[in-house]
Image (cartoon, rainbow, N blue to C red):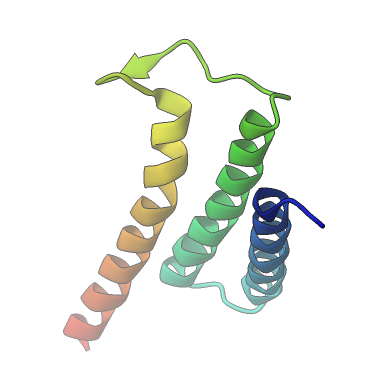
Length: 99
């Protein structure tokens, strides 16, 4: 029987990998700044997932830089995709208001 935690990581990598694959395909077709920002958010999310798994497996270690007691690398992995999504949505909303 497979460890549920390992199964969770495999499913997480597979689903995020599929999302990232389609995001890269979409990147070649959409050239607007809003879509590129959203796609960058998905790419950063996948990179954060891989980084988190590497830390959990003990292959990598957290960096020595802390912000409010939280490792900076973990904070960036959590916030960077959301920041890209926010930027993309703001650009979309500003374009819709101008028309």
